[in-house]
Length: 238
Image (cartoon, helix red, strand yellow):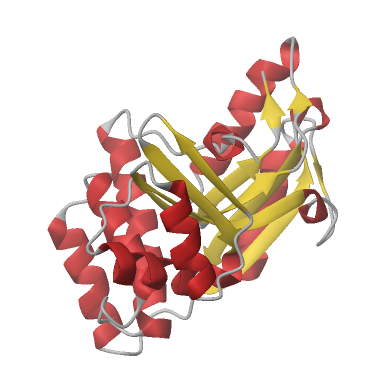
């Protein structure tokens, strides 16, 4: 599987405005996760992982607390997951995950990003079959056998394990995320996960070159500027 997960495009907080957008995306995701699975991180491992990731990305505590308090109070916005698939510049494959309270607005905004960059919005399933929906857990360590044994004892379906440069990275189907994380923490204690995410990993890569590189950057910038867009996954390689 390699380190293909590093090819995932991340929002880069280079300016105050960009940071505000990143914080907003985290706040929305924390709110939805806490509202659907409970506000206690001890009982909601998805929320726990999300909070740890938010802290690593230096999301202010008041942003996190406000999102959780909002979920605690009930009511509020009714966000739903919306996933769009298509082909970006250079014919690379793209998956766009959104949280939206207005699907008609969101699909119009996402379609605009595709059409303005000579890309094509596809139908559901048009490219996702070429990605693996994986949970990825990375942490310091070098005993690959002990990690595999702990996961097998917990009956976790392990897709792959990497052991490189003093770090172990575990790949499992996304449905095994909570079980895998619980098995690791119960066996090895309070692990400091440097990677703790669920992603779409491309099975193959598409070379993007020439004028398509600048067009791809524009495409990604347009998508990341949309408030409803949470994550963008692609198989572009430069």
